[in-house]
Image (cartoon, rainbow, N blue to C red; front, side):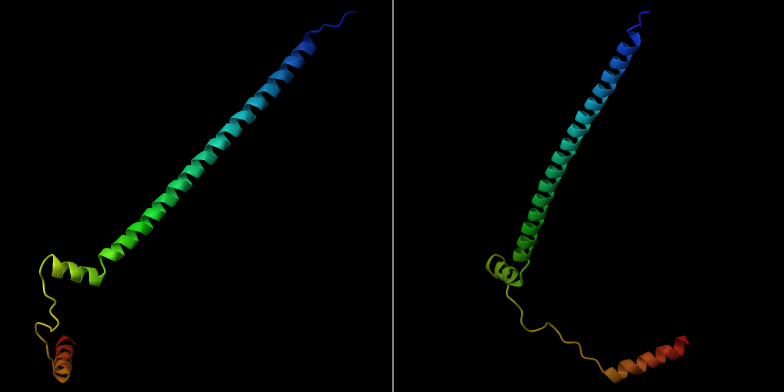
Length: 109
């Protein structure tokens, strides 16, 4: 009696198919992993660039908003004069304010 070769051929083809599927899956996963690493590197570079830009803008803002710079621009370009003395002085009597506070407390209690 002769044994049929069909079961061994079927087994070999199935085994070859399984190995091929695993090989393709591993290659696909490896490509996906490499792609995600490239995206991560790109995102890190973008983050560093934005961070440097933020630091640069902060330094520029501090330079522009410094009091000496504002005063010099106001004097040279706008012709303004720095007023050293206050325009008016408000004087108040502390005792009078305390009296008014007492009156208000009594009124609203």
